[in-house]
Image (cartoon, rainbow, N blue to C red; front, side, top):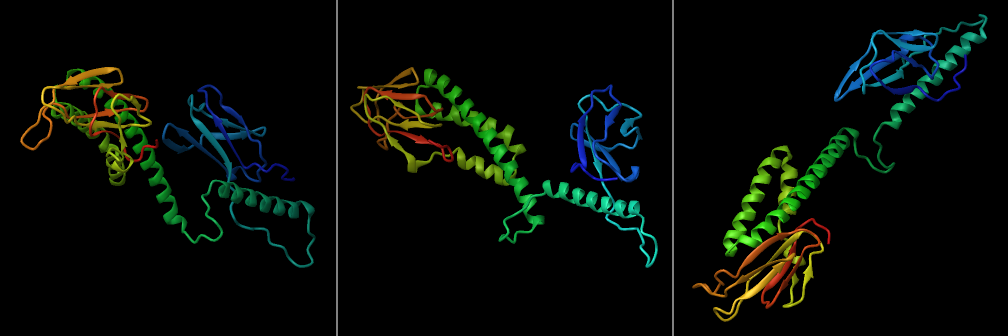
Length: 291
């Protein structure tokens, strides 16, 4: 026999009916064949099969959607004993070479599924693989949570802009909304993921954009419009965020902070802001959000 195929593994998907599947690679012994099934997240080894006419035949058809991995796993041994001056049959020698080839193919298939590092990197696999899994998990969780929070924050901000009477009420509603969302999502985050999420939801003051009176500004990314109006008491000013307009009366408390004119509004990318009069008005992107 020769080993002309480089394949030592094939994966099928069951349909609940088919029991017979082709074996596209040669093998020396039926005991070298391993059959594993994956259904959902559960993996099992199937032993209810036989080889008939070069095909794998199951006693019970694999369930619909079940993945079936058929693998040739040759023992990494050499059991042929050669003796001096004995006749060396070509078939015996060829069988040994076939087994060596199959063993090499088997190791090559495992290497193709392995994580490797640069030739100059001395990182050990035992520490590399867990780190990769954790990083992927943290990234997926943080991205999903941030997207959901940004979308929900934009919806709450639109509703709050039509009914809020002062900055305290608007900020309280936004904080309550974010707190509810965070409580639902944080249970699924690692400690590192929680830190990343909290960091990404904080304003990045180093990227603050100072707004100009009468000039509309469109948010280039998720962030907040915030600020307050300083002017003569009673003159008031008008703010418009993404088409929703609110007029505030100017007034000051004992600390010279405007009473009723402050605001802090979460917005999504593409929402715009304009003001009839402006003073100390800003757009602040969220940390970790690209402009």
